[in-house]
Image (cartoon, rainbow, N blue to C red; front, side, top):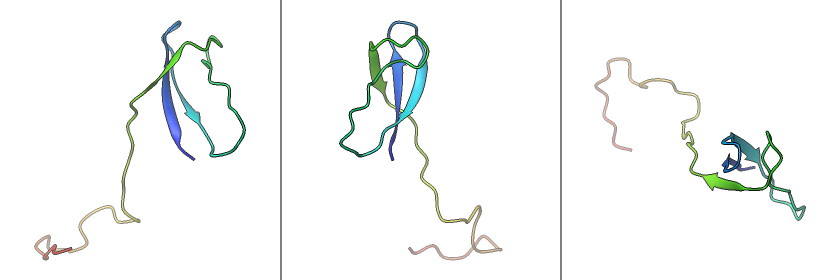
Length: 66
């Protein structure tokens, strides 16, 4: 499910909402003040690989022709 970041124009709160892909309507309102004067903002995201935390070649000089 995608996570969206919102900013409340009334109280200045920045918060994330997890929105599923369903037919249910989710009421978009500030988690702090409850008002609906919110704006979706650009949020950061992370792209990673599957479990490797460093180079796969111990010497660091292996070819990387992927």
